[in-house]
Image 1 (cartoon, rainbow, N blue to C red):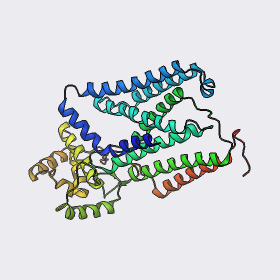
Image 2: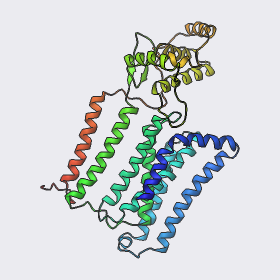
Image 3: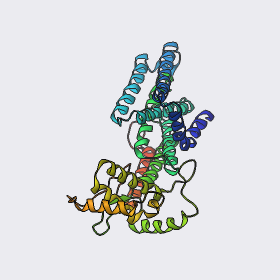
Image 4: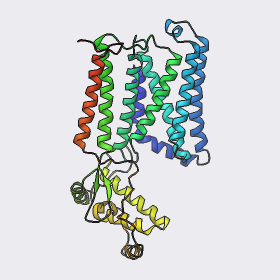
Length: 373
């Protein structure tokens, strides 16, 4: 248990500093950065695959668990892990080599975490041997993204939780191939079924809370002004703007390290980045509308060194007037999706799903037939 907990703590608590370490490595070895990161990831994945194959060849049939899982099935599980990892990495590839290499490292991190948790419950005589380590490792993935959302300079989002889940799946496939479980049958004992249901339900709630805090927001419409999405409604944005204008005079927002990220400040930076990209591309209409959003809702963020001079604002305004709009401007500045969903409905749906999972696990026997309490 201790190695798994230590590895989990390192992954979660190290999240605020991974980006800084990566930046330092890139600055120190700009020409070899990709080779160092890519080589490390390739070496770790190759070591895991070689270890798995070596164990199968060395101990093919010595235990009852291994005997119940033929060698060809164990090799097939390793192949499945490689295929799943390769297909997922290819599907979500951004085309940015640096970013893709970092995401591949998730397979090393969470594959290892999944293996450590699997070893804890491997000897369980039922499906808990897989369900418990899967839920534990995925919970670490949710906690990791949650911490990244809370600290400056990192972005935690649902997309990365799915990436962590793919890595956990690959890690479990290899773990089962290396150390076959005693059984994966659905438990007959009601307590064991409830324990599995509780673990899965807790994971569903954790993911639901994460989505609620990170991905649910509002679409801001302000009397024909540019439309954009925010985690706050218009009244909350106005209140935040007034409050930050005063507080930041003496206590500016942290930009890095293990500190609480100011999400209002981060949203303002999204629009500044989008505005500046539009300026670089010569898209005056987009740049002007993003600046209107900033002036109206994120003025304290602009005042931290990003406000246009009066001459520049006048010039951009004149150019924007000469650019006939095709429709009302809708900003796409947010770096990850914000969904306009009623929070009460979402929370109720999450609670119902978690409760249904727990109820079904409690009520269903190994054959799938309803069992009396």
